[in-house]
Image 1 (cartoon, one colour):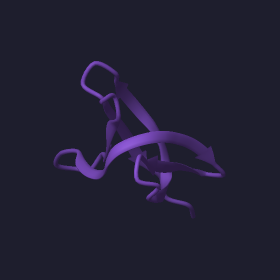
Image 2 (spheres, rainbow, N blue to C red):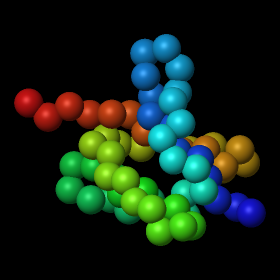
Image 3 (cartoon, rainbow, N blue to C red):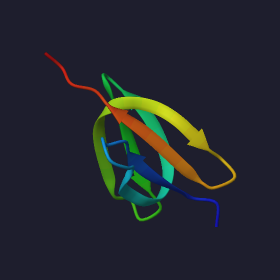
Image 4 (cartoon, helix red, strand yellow):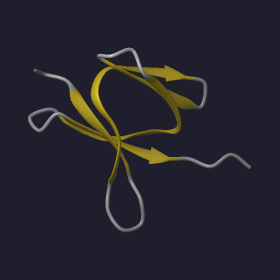
Length: 65
């Protein structure tokens, strides 16, 4: 399987927010994550980095003022 795991970057360490991510779609000021089961999450943030070999997506949360 080639799906990825998505992590939000926190002050202490990355925190898993979704497994088996199949789609990453920019949406307004955030990112929509869709996994292989059809579950979706919209995270207000931007992609910090990708680790393709490790199948990891790191998202940096942004705050709107």
